Image 1 (tube, one colour):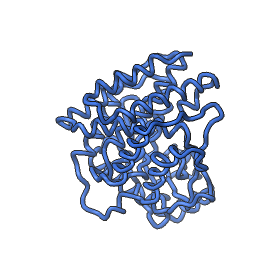
Image 2: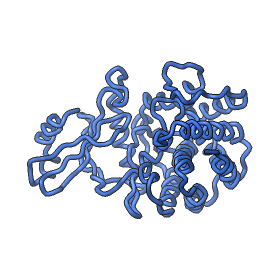
Image 3: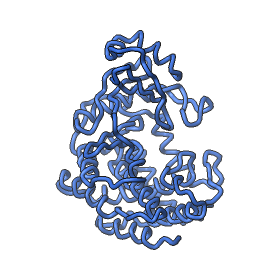
Image 4: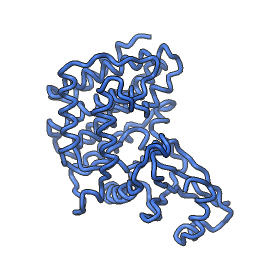
Length: 363
């Protein structure tokens, strides 16, 4: 189901969907630019609409030469259903689940925009980051009903994350990477590589809780004071710090973009709002979660400089000269985070470290 006609034919033969729409004909439009799946908005003449997500037998970003098991979307259905049970106001409504056809239909978040996009042109209410902190705490404090591991986890996608975060980016001239012409990675210290191995081991073996697995500003949508978390196909049983660190890294990408657009830096109030809500719901935050969050943040910052799926805020910097400086800033920050995360004792130390890099960049 990769064409508009195929989508219409699917809706015609699916009772739950063709009764959803009362005013044909239908408009079908592919939306989004995700790496994995095809996403369509379907609407009728009255404006009634929904989103249909379909998993093709390959990676959307790289095409048919990169095959992927279609059951990845079944994992996403299961995980979104669980997330809806623990954070109902933060997850879109799921209308129709079809594991046999590897697709599902969900609420169309009309008027919402990606947090990643909103970072470019508007101030984001701190209450939204507080909601993310509450969601992260819920992942840790609540436990799904018992299922086989594969119910909530796709081994192929987990391996892709493993390779593209912890392995390929740290092998010189690895063919899986895509280095921009304006950036040459600096040699990495023994401490850096040892700590990447520590993070890899945690990623592979720590079954702390069920996490989103790809929680960044491109998988979060906002509208005024409302927030919705989407795209949960990378979910797995893992360390909570992986989700926290990934989210922190993408907040930082947005702040680096702001640096080079001469816009106010909001890093400190943003992460304080997130962490305060997280800490309040946790009661207290175990030291290992703080440290691992910082380490995984560094790993995400580092890998996005060299993998095919680049950080969109960095790519949105128009000037090649500024983009070169932004990449260098990001690399230096990532190295320090990775080399020191095991020694950090307080969240304030993380804020200080990041702001030191953000505030000392040069134009």
